Image (cartoon, rainbow, N blue to C red):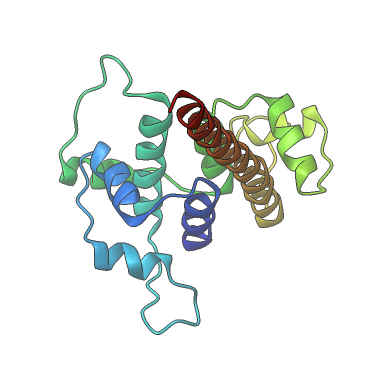
Length: 184
């Protein structure tokens, strides 16, 4: 599931290898382009490498910094400290969803909207159950289906935004060209 999440986020936000390596670099983790390539391959590809939990945690921490900026007062960790800290965290779908939610500044209503883009219906109370402490009586494990639908909805939402921006830029260039012809 880790490799799938990495690939879907890459596609949803139109990230190239250079940008993905920069995201790892934001949290002081050096990943080689060939390592990244292995994690981005599909399972049936000969160069496919299973992405460990700690590495997805590191990427998601970098993604949060990339989208929201560095947290003030946060101490810089070396690569070894970052790996040790990430290995201590138990990564499950609830943690992945929460980190993506934080990176994109999504509220429960936003998540409901994103999930509706993937034709997945859920209530606000069901969503809040994913973000409770595991010891809370209303805590609920987040399944793979929910995570996949969330990533599909995010892809739909952010790919549409990127297409609108491209159209606006293209129309802006066309307008500039017309203005130049008029001035000449």
